Image 1 (tube, rainbow, N blue to C red):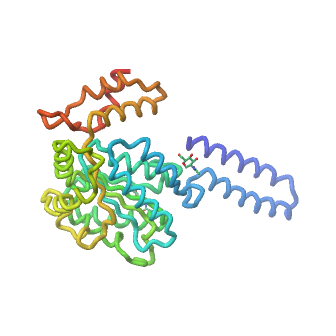
Image 2 (cartoon, protein in one colour):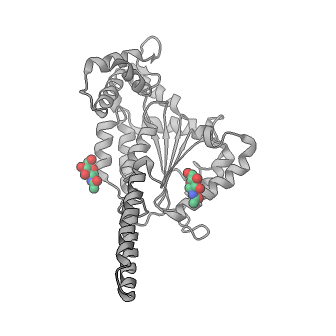
Amino acid sequence: MKAARIYLLLHILSTTGVLVNTFDPFTTTVVIGVGATLGRTIYNYLHESCDSKWIAFNATGLQVDLENKLFGQHIASRIILKAVNGFMSNSNPKKPLVLSLHGWTGTGKNFVSQLIAENIYREGMDSSFVHVFTSTLHFPHKSQIDTYKSQLQQWIKGNITNCERSMFIFDEMDKMHPGLIDSIKPYLDYYERLDGVSYRKAIFIFLSNTGGDSIIQTALDFWQAGRNREEIELKDLETSLSLSVFNNKQGGFFQTSLIDKNLVDFFVPFLPLEYQHVVQCAMAEMKARGLQPRREIADMVAKDLVYFPKSERVFSVKGCKTIESKLDYYT
Ligand SMILES: *[C@@H]1O[C@H](CO)[C@@H](O)[C@H](O)[C@H]1NC(C)=O
Ligand SMILES: *[C@@H]1O[C@H](CO)[C@@H](O)[C@H](O)[C@H]1NC(C)=O
């Protein structure tokens, strides 16, 4: 894809160059001028740049994606849509958008980040304005925390200087060193400018398992009381969620002032997934692969997964995480 673009660009420029030789000096200057402008236009057209051609929020697209591709997450879906819509339609936000996504593995946290990116950046997750950091991958050694700190600060500053509509996704936030979280705090706050750079149009998304247990407990309480999971509301989770975020001694969250300074705009809970949602994930994945979705295959995939609690087998241990490889096996 990239190679083809560059080839086309070179081709057009060299064609313009050939033309130049056949004209007198005056025309040559004009042609070179036009050629340069044309070249720049073509370059912008082919090469991702920080403008509305490459970065344009599609509110309908996000809504449709959340409705059709994300399963079993009525609360998360609603919060994300409202938060991102509100932020992206505000031409003068007072601070960057900071979302903290909580829940167990396979419930859709990474997937939602991807949907947000795809509906803002034409290149989606491949955009050069979307940055993903995974704690255990990018910042593995405690001893190098000071290097990581200055590196991360430079990256955030450098990238936002390049493009104010940048997006930063921090995966495994619960494994991130508290000092490192502290070092990005200034960028999340209500500053007009820091060292001449405005961070207000950026989006920060934190992903973690923190609070996952208490979310599961609430979902299980509802299930055991025979209540519909759609009846679970944010307020049913909020108290236990922020308490467990505060008290999680493993995670760095509780030591930092992300929460008590209100730098996080939205805490977004992801519920554990049930059998029916795994079936939906499998059907959607078959469709995405260009296959005719078949319920009996989706059922086989869903039956292959492990569910908990052991006796009732209500929730999928890994959510929808392993269905891709299971599908390879059954199709
Ligand atoms: C926005 O998303 C909708 C629904 O997916 C799609 O039909 C439409 O073409 C998109 N608009 C743009 C400008 O990409
Ligand atoms: C932007 O962030 C990436 C990491 O995602 C980093 O490698 C790069 O150097 C940063 N760019 C600038 C200009 O700081």
